[in-house]
Image (cartoon, rainbow, N blue to C red):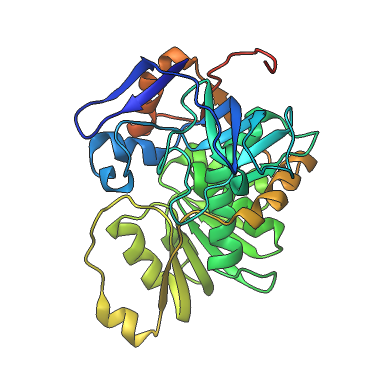
Length: 320
């Protein structure tokens, strides 16, 4: 089968011919129906995220929707032909990071990471839900603890931030969105926020209970710390700067709590799948040809992606 593999910093992502993997006990073999492109893969390829990956070489790709093609011994709760998403379950069971992933025609996954898909949810929408949309959901619902009584600021209205804004609106919060890209600001306005702007200073009179930073650079974090209320919460999701210098005096004097948020939890995926299937959340997606994966990742790295991109390693083929 065809698989894109990475063998360490400087090696790039190379399309290889490799054997079709067979499931061991407690595993399932899956045919990859769609695999989303994640900015984490860009960090791995440029070396800044190389430490996240233990296996070399490895087939990357961790935003996966698939169909089960074989069951390993002792797997009784799943069945061949079942439509599934693959959860990223810590520790050491993150497909495409800890072991071979979805930039390939087939993969194997531990049965405990498998989450069934609703019948009315497409593979294309499901793949971007398992990580990107799930991460945004988790950061708002679990890490920030947003409720309908809160006023929330969302900094960065790209792939994750736009979903975070939509989730906060669906929870009934009063939401303000900020992005330096006026196009993203206009797009975000249709999802129900109180207001959106290219400058957080436009909301200087708003009392923010929580500010979500989906950019993660010094400028956005400093802006969040200044804008959030005394004893408020700033949630850092974006990782734009590997390190940043923050105003410690202001953090202490305002008694601000800063929380990091990474990924999601398996038990959250059915909620997200149902929200997408019912139309509450509508991912903006774009298919790219499997043989153009590297070009698409370069576009993602350069900030030129306008939608959540995905590939279909098996094309439109049916289950084999």
